[in-house]
Image 1: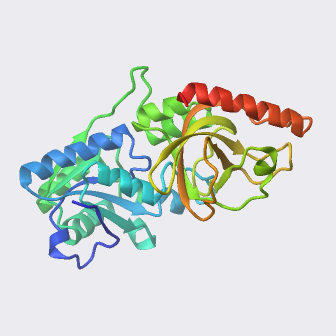
Image 2: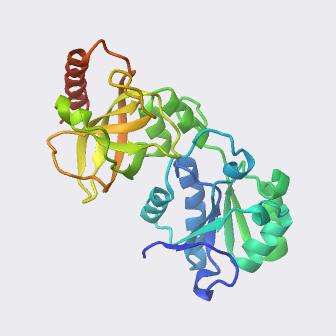
Length: 311
């Protein structure tokens, strides 16, 4: 069944009420998030009700910490696509505004979860907090479930074999450290930047390496430098590529962005949406003495990326 996105919680269609739902922010939909969704899935199957995810837009961090640098691991479109692939049938993308942010934990459980969404089951992670002042906890959610007639499951913390806690923060840290493989291990898939191909200065084409340029926008900024990558085209093809995330210090500094050279591909894709997966970090971005040195290094980057990707 295709995913249905619902952007409100009042006056719902009866068909959208009564789900077993995973509750959280789910930025990245990493393995820990998937564990919470699995708990909701078990309840949905046992109860014969739809499987849902309840999350918020914008991310609450945007309201409470507006000066923070960009931090997102997925766009809403990516998040919805991943959730659909996990069998989620309803995505309750609730508006996080002043009214929502001012609710007490009890008001949220009673008004939104019970009266609004009519949930049958709520699955939460071990560290969830909700309600103004973040006073709600997994234990209080269980108490509200008993009061308002929905069951609650709490999933424990998950860790990687090396002891690192599975979390969105750990993914961001790995990306900032230039360790996309570590980020992928926590996510369960490569970290990928999706966006519209924008027209740049076309310097790459003049140098023999035409690139597809995508703005980072609200994504967390990975370590600047060159990556072996794979790029999913608008038609679904996944092609080997080499990408630079940086400011182009050799040819004139610009705002940090993603520039991707796709192997064996030369077509006009301006205005199309592509998604580039970061596979391996090759080297930092550096300023070269001139264009010949830059072109020579780009050639070496392509050879190294092809070796890693088997392309």
